[in-house]
Length: 150
Image (cartoon, rainbow, N blue to C red; front, side):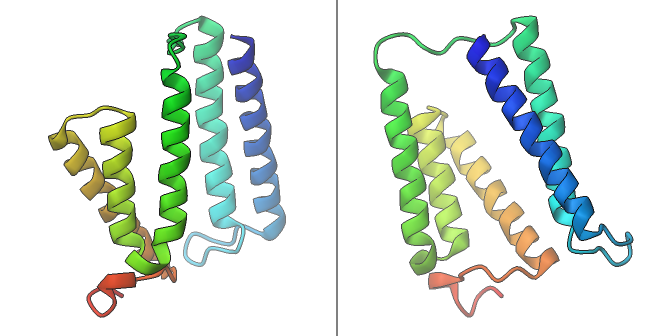
């Protein structure tokens, strides 16, 4: 529990810092958001989640996944490998396909979900990334889908 408390406090401090920096950049108005709007929102989200995490860790409801059989190390190595794959493949495959593969590999190999959950969550993640790209006009690499998506 001390490790989870330290992690929660660290994330809480990071969230407060990001909120402060967002306020320094100016939030703007709801009709015309300023440059600090997104950082402030993300910092607020991180602060709320870390506060919830801290409350769980202090109540003792956190599950212990350390079984001592080395599965935690294998999962960590697979997670780092999947993230490295994402970083290397995003420019060639594009953000939508790479996000789909990231979620599919992560959920099937690391989280051990069945194929229905894996496929539906990977599609939902692609939809969320596409919606984010469309709403905020972010320039993400289209990759193999160039010409089909904007």
